[in-house]
Image (cartoon, rainbow, N blue to C red):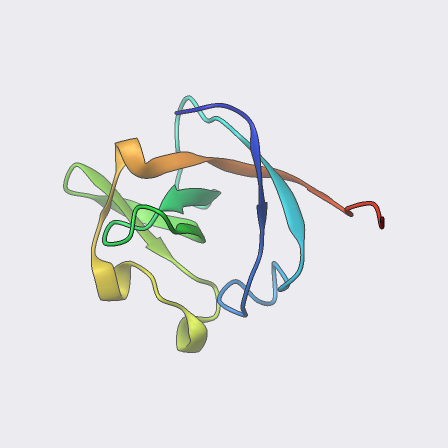
Length: 99
């Protein structure tokens, strides 16, 4: 796991729990658990960070799914996500200051 970071939710894949436009602080997690909402590098596009819920252990990685199955590109499409691709757990939602 890396360091603290932030992510912006883009799209409806995690609705209703997370809304498009929300900003979240991501904290490194020593242990990922089923039910955690995590930020992870997309296994086929490492430059893309996805935010999904941990559903189960799969092979040597994790099976991640969006809460809104009809609008989610997740492990159902790209398979398991390796432990090394998990950036951390969503910890706190915040509002960005307006310029």
